[in-house]
Length: 458
Ligand SMILES: [Zn+2]
View 1: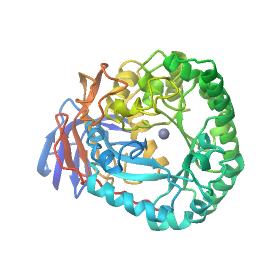
View 2 (view 1 turned 135 degrees about the vertical axis):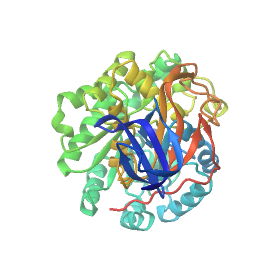
View 3 (view 1 turned 180 degrees about the vertical axis):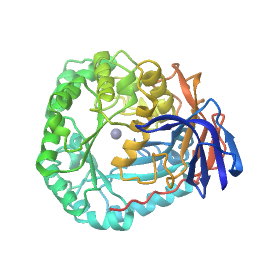
View 4 (view 1 turned 45 degrees about the horizontal axis):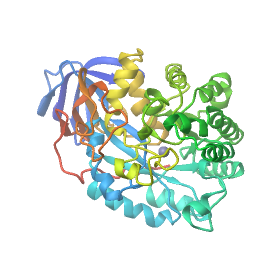
């Protein structure tokens, strides 16, 4: 057999299944064969992966490109994703305009600037979005949407429009019903946070003049505010028989809900958490202000338990590119600092170091929650898997060589990282996207504009 690329002698990490020493052949950007021996294989290009682990390229479905910078700038910055082993992203955006106009525009900008493959999850904000749902799916190839419970009853003010939906509990029901009537592949990603509690507590702590960094921030949206919203979301999802994906689980209280009431997500609800909820706590810098807030070390420990016992099945970074200047542009106080921070560039090293090396999480579980499960949830049928016919996307890593996390090492355009100064192992030596080596020895090797929009079908 003749192949374009042969990755030989690697320890291949098959999601869920385990690690096997096999050889991978690639033709036309797709996995063409998984071989026990390579004597009969003729290859144009060979990567000797002896001693390295070959993960499926990571799929990060929780990105916020274009929030604080231009969308062009943030797509250019996707080189850092590749350095960290991420080969596909789903960008979550929300605009009170017709998505029939919006998607072709961002698709064009992305294909001119992105370093890796991408698609979009679109926030449902207006009746127009609901009316145009079928057309958006068919014409734009989008099958995932987002419901921001955190904008409940405040959407019109936030976006300065008059046609916003309330984002009420009933809006969840009617949307899930509509999705179900179109296709079971449609996904509704939901931010769970009880905003009556959150808004009341923000006012209370502001009035009191509280300003103790992440500790104060944690108090403004306690774990129970998320758990209560999670409970009602999953309950309504069960009533309808819908397909929901809970974004960024942040609290031990929410893990309690999932463990004590497994029937709530028996219907197949997917649950994501983020590296910052797993690896940071309220003692860390205000750089890590995010919504929902980062809580205590015991919350982080419970989230790791949720991953180990399967109640949490996806990792997304909630990556928000910005600079320190922008983050603190409105002031240094806890209530002035902007939400979000960049975090994607060290996703795999963080999971390997903190999850596998410190907590014994099997590598195949890490591959499962950072690629396969995410691709399955978001209907990315050719991504996140090591199977013949799938896109040849790989993160080929040395799980023993450690580096100190800095923005520079990640080739990030941002000037800070909430993980800065930590030692992490498991950096990609090579990142491969559709059969093309795009990172070698931790350095991007190609030009921007090679990423493709991934069209999805129902
Ligand atoms: Zn987010």
